Image (cartoon, rainbow, N blue to C red; front, top):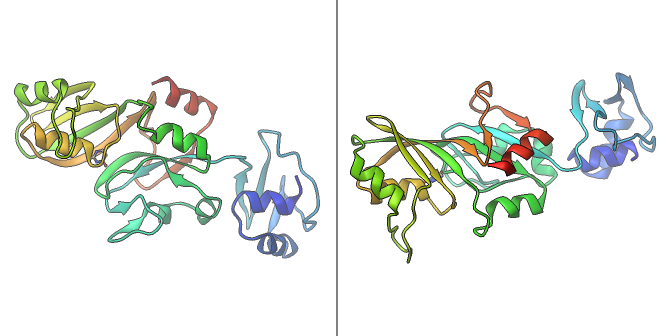
Length: 236
Ligand code: URA
């Protein structure tokens, strides 16, 4: 693929802007400046990288990302009341069409997937595909066995015709519980906890499928997902 197309597909602006970056000697391959926008490079080589203004980027045909979402950010490119999660990411991701894979509320923290692969986004957000999602919830009132049973057996949410059950609901402390749900309904976990007779004060997503939020990833930080991560995601 030629260098202009590499930058363009990776979200570094319009073709004209990408050509300008190259002409202005801001792009290097393997540590060597390349000012030829038509020069060809082997992007099918998984280790192929390029750098723009000294920052190294791997070439990825599709972007699969994981963000440790902090509280106070909306999963929208056009946020209403808070900052957008996209303000935590390099701008080229939004430019190349990366979107959130499902949404977390502005005050929910933890594992958020993002991608520009439409099929992948659809696969993990489709109501037909049941993917387990593990949340740690902090509650206002002490959790009791009746609430845990209600969550496991199913609670009827306002506006729904059938009860929704957690695949697992286990107390971790007096005011904390781990809850696994398969669906991705609007405010689902908070509504389930409310329907069980408590109130969710804080919510953190720990896992989607078999993929856990890495303990080393700080709130607000992001990372690429590799093939192993994508395999874990599907295996959950
Ligand atoms: N359930 C909720 O209530 N909120 C989230 O952000 C995710 C799941």
